[in-house]
Amino acid sequence: MESCLKELDYLVANKSLYTERRAAVIDSLKLRLAYAGTLEEKIALTNHLDLQYIVYQTDSALVYANLMLKYAEETGNRARIVESTVNVARILNVMGQYKEALSILDAVSDDVPENEKTAFVYCRLTIYNSLVEYTIDKHSKEKYDSVATVYRDSLLNYYNLTPMNHLFVQAEAMIHSGRYEEARLILEEKYASMDPMERDAGIIAYSLGVIYRELGDEDTAALYFVRSSMADIYSGVKQHTSLQIVSEIMYDRYDIDRAYRYAKSAMEDYIYCNARLRTLEMSDIFVLIDHAYQEKKHQASTTMMIFLITLTVFIVIFLCLLAYLRRINRRLKAVKKRYYDANVKIKSVSDKLRDANMIKEEYISLYMEQSSEYLDKMNHIKNRVNKNIRRSVDPRTLMEELEKTIDMEAEVKNFYHVFDVTVLHMFPDFPAKMDELLVPEARGLYSRTEDSLSPEFRIFALIRLGITDSTKIARFLRYSLSTIYNYRTKLRNKALGPREDFEKNVMKIDSLQYF
Image (cartoon, rainbow, N blue to C red; front, top):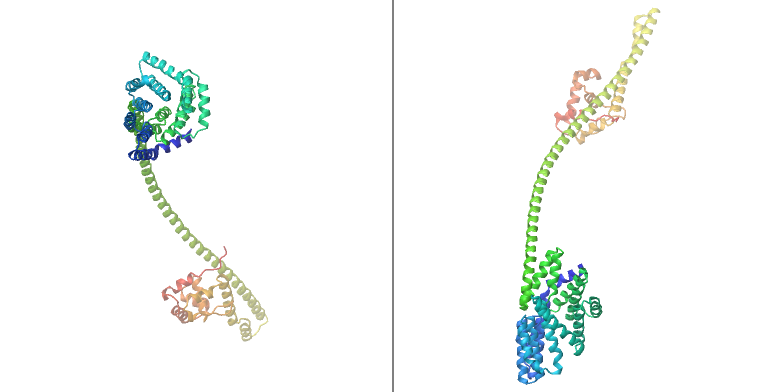
């Protein structure tokens, strides 16, 4: 069903294409009529034109039917006159002028040629069917129905109908007598063999829709009404019923958008075709559907407005929340930076404390080792002195022996060696780092062996250990104060950066990392 509705949607949206196609056929017939020579050609062409117009524009159909009657009267051919009169009556019936239609048929009823009697009776049946459909008075409706039944039975029993018209009348008789299943079978058999977009297929589909509705199968009925509407639009037909019924079905199923589109399209077709009765019939339905459509549009507009307002509120809340989160994020970043800076400072202090502790441990170790050695030496000297005193050794001899025992130069060298090894143990890259602080041409001038330092670097090693006072450095290294001053000044003068920052940079030389 939905696929058929989508096809119908497409046909409704593009119905102008099919209207133009029928208009092109009509224009072609008009052009041929303008150049027609004989009355027979003119009668044939006007007949084609009124057949094209009868489902397209009834006023124009009547014009060409009357023109055909005029040409027929000019020929004096009774069969042509009756044929043309039947065409005029048929169009008047479509226009709702039933009295006038019957009147002109009655005018020729006394002398209807044999080959026109079938069309004559078929036209009268069509008029009485219309009277049954549109008459309100019950008594009159029953009278017209009885007459229609007589004509219907006569056509089936005594007249030579075309196969298609015979099928229509036969199915109509079955429906009228309540034999819906029989009518359904013959119509569906014929419908299955046809192109569903043919005009006659559309009529059969409409009849099947009526039958299924009587059988209570609304879904199948709706499907056939949709198919009938598709055939009508594809054929360029403006005088139809199925699309109006489909619009009502869509309305009942709350598909208001489709109901409105179909009803609007049907109303446009009725107005274009000048089908007055159809227009009046459609007016009440269209007003109802249009009201529902406008109400839906209003609700949709209201819903959209509420949605937009709600969306705007949510956007404002979101933006406020976003701004708040950004502010919180900035604060968190600031706090994170402070924590980071604090951690950096803590790490720096921790590194310094670790270096200080390590240096202190090395200092204590060096001090204890040196003190232990000196105590051993003092104890050894003491024992020798006591021994010599007990032996009453000459004091001069004793002094000479003491000088031999205590070699101060060797002691100082040993002290420097122990100091250098200790410094290089704590600061393995000390000589290289010192070179990096000097101008390129001074690098390598003050390096010694792998386990010893130059006097200049030895002085700055003490500065790195935290001893910056020249007097203490001189006393510790047994250098003169002037030597200490000269060495410090000499290296400051060869610093790579600012002289005043040289010793600060020395203090930044890293020690051996234990962690």
